[in-house]
Amino acid sequence: MERTIVRYGADVLERVAAPVTDITGAEARLVQDMVRVMYQAPGVGLAAPQVGVSQRIMVTDTSAGEKPDHLLVLVNPEIVDTAGEQYEEEGCLSIPGFSERVRRPGKVVVRGLDMDGREQVLEGSGLLARAFCHELDHLNGVFFLDHVSFIKRDRIRRRIRKLIKQNEW
Image 1 (cartoon, rainbow, N blue to C red):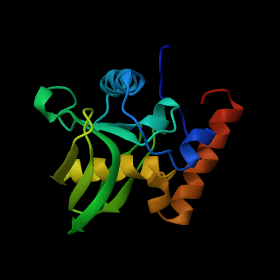
Image 2 (image 1 turned 60 degrees about the vertical axis):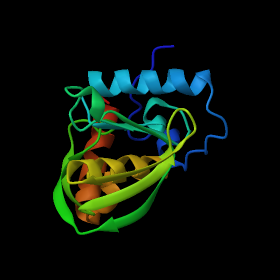
Image 3 (image 1 turned 90 degrees about the horizontal axis):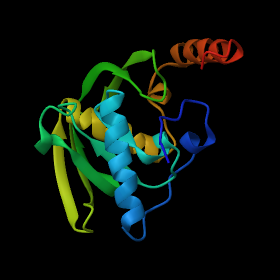
């Protein structure tokens, strides 16, 4: 099955993803697909719902594939600590062509499992902290648009509805 990025408006993106209870070959294949799709996009993070799968799995790579050791995979991730603040431009692979400035923590600590089921605690700052928050939002049915003003969010939603009517979404 060739996985592709699901766009804003799809039901799978608007609900809380299910926890992974067992890491099997199916999850390993899903992660491989997610990494491939993320790099092809190109992007620095992707959550399973963005490829149509309602599972709590996310991948990030702030090097966009340039540094193999930067690829991070987390199963059932959760934020355990935050500090500071950053206010930067943010976009989303599921909402192509749109971006807005979003306030996020400057530093984030996340806990989850690796693909072998071992607990991992990872710390990120700057872009990595932003990616952690963004992908965890997707696992909770939240978009970066939910972090901007009503006026900006409404403007983008109206533009997307227009693109949908024109069969360009």
